[in-house]
Structure formats: structure tokens, C-alpha cells
Image (cartoon, rainbow, N blue to C red; front, side, top):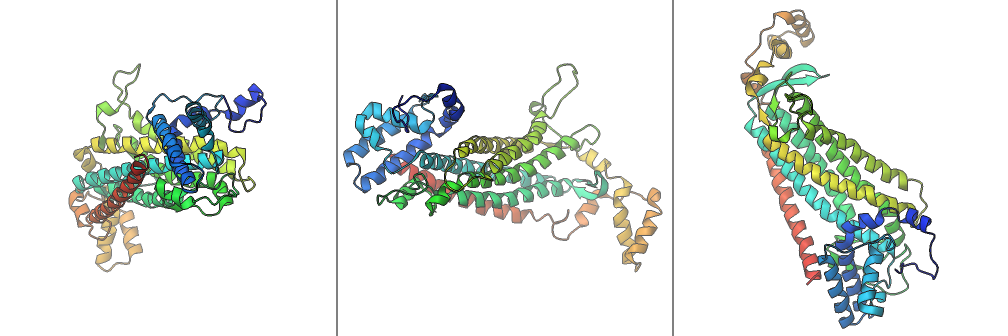
Length: 445
């Protein structure tokens, strides 16, 4: 098994095991992207005269075979997907397979592989996120006239509504979508052509490769290409962390509000797990695990940030360790956004319990403001109501939430604005997804 850096000696097996780590396992998720990147690179080599057209076609044919082979093996002796692919090409095509690496480095390859992998995953995550936001908006619309207590300091505070609660989570995720779009744009730069971080002495066409792969642009400075490996990964993970933080808050609310003590919401039994000893238990494990996975995502972000924070410019082997948290973070966000949309679509509201929970004290501020309308200064009205809290009577909670008409309150949720934003983002997603897939389809023809 020939290594890309082979110089005629055998590495120490224990050192080899340590330095390879689990890259040969992780890289199974990068096989498709490595081959796609190699086809684009081979096309460029043909364009500048390194490969003949018939050579390019032979390489492309074998690379497409690898993509379609679900059982393509990467052994620990290969070290990574790049070596496994090149060894396969050399075995099949002889000396032609050895030409594929001209003008590029493994650093180049892992960068383009993870950029393409991230781009594909981010598009899926964005679509999932839009689905989740849409589910929350529908939930808010359906339940906009169901009152429930609002809380501060985890104590009853003022009248709220199920619609206001759901709309709040939808708007939080819309802001996260902006962050995700920024991370996508920064990741959407083609790194190929950097080689080991200092370019090559041949006049390669980096723009050609970028266009073939459907990137937004070429990443310019070749040293920065290498410096950006962990940086861009951390930007992606930072965006995913923002999403997970808000999903975690949503999950936490649902855990609390679906308890017997609150009873505002109810999860379908098929979404819940039981106890091995207590026959009555129906546990919201999916929400608890979601809440816990927020910390897992933060851990992935911290791993990458701490690996890269004190590195010198140029490639350093430490960067190998940023691959796993990036890939796992993307997979975690993809799964979580999909699952929580499913949960929201299944949640039921217990209207009677929500209304029953609107006890007299939550209307204290409403009473104080009624006194203000009679000409009393607010501070005096506040003290008057505070002195008579025990004598307050509950207002009609449904009427109360409908009467709040200012922008963003219970009687004016502004859901149409969110719907409009969802529609515009969906159109942008359709365009970008179609463009990316169209480029790849053309490349593989």
C-alpha cells in the first residue's frame, strides 16, 4: 500500500496508528466529495496540457466508479481517502493514476472535501431549519387565541399566549438563519490550487476548478487558504451552535410545560419513552437528549477553536483534528433540526389547562395600567395594586390577549412577516441548491 508521501521506508506501526487516528473511518463520508474534487482537478490538468483528453476520460470513468461503489474501502494503511483513491487509480490505470496528484497537496484535497461536504450539509440544515420555523409559525397561527401565563424568574408574570410563545421561537431561529447564511457564504470558497499553502510553479486555472465545483468564488490568498481550514470550520460550528442554543431553549420549555404540574402541552406517546420500573411513566426523552446535545455542539466548537488558536501560519498537522468535530457537528445539526420539526408538528395544546393557569395575579399590571388611564401616576397605581394583590380577580384571559394590539404582542403577532421571510429564504435555497446540484451533475456527465 503506497502512501502519498512514500520515500522508500516503512513507518513505525505505533506511530502510524497514532498519527492516522480515525481519519480512515471519518473519510468514508468524504469519498464522494474527494472523487468529485479530483474530477474537477483532472479537468483543469487537461486544460493546461498535463493530461490528454483520453487520459482525463479514463480517470473520470474510474472516479465515477468509486462514487457509485458503496463498499469502497479505506484502510488504516491508506491513512485517508485521498491515498485510497489514488492507490485505486494507480492499480486500475497504472502510471496514469500517478498523474492525478500533479499541482495539488493532501492539504488541498481535505480542504475541498470538507468544504463540499459542509456546503451540502449546510444546504440540508437550512432546508430543515426553514421547515422547523414554518412548523412553529403554523403552531402559533393555530393557537394564537389560547392564553397562557408568561413567566419571568420562572414565576408567573403577565398574560401571554401559545401563539406568542411559538412565534418567539420562530423569530429566534430566523435570526439564526442569517448567521447560517453567512457561514455558508464564507465556506462557499474554492480552496483548490493552494497546494501546500504556497501555490505551484505551473499556471493552473483555479477559477476553472471553482466553477466546475459550483463554488461561489475562488479563495484568493494561498497561505490564508491553509490558515482558514479550522477557522471556517469554527465559523460553521458557531452558526450551528446558535441554532442548537435556541432549539435547546425550545426543548426545555416543552419539557417544563408538558409536565403534569403545568399541563399546557402534551407530546404524543409515540414520541416518548417509558420507564423500566415505573409503569405509568411517559418520558420526553427526545427533548431531554436535544437539550443535552446543545452542549455536545458547543464542545465541537470549543475543540476546533482551541486546536487552531495558537498555530503558526501555514499548514500544521494539528488541523487534522478539526475534521471530526466539524463533520459530527454538521450531522448533529442536520438530525436535530429534522427531529424537532417532527416534535412541533405533533405537540398538542391543552386549552383548558392554559386558561385555568391564568390566575388573578398575572393581571396585576393590567389593573395598574387601568388606574393610570384614570390620571394616576404609574408608580402610585403600582403601589395601590400591590397593596391589594390578594383581592384581584381574574380578567377574561382570551379577551385580554386579543386586546393587546401593539406590534409583536399577543393580539398582533406579525406572523405574516415571518411567512414572507420564509418564502424568500426558500426561493433563495431552491436557487442555490439547484445551481450546486446542476454543476455537479454536469461535472459527472
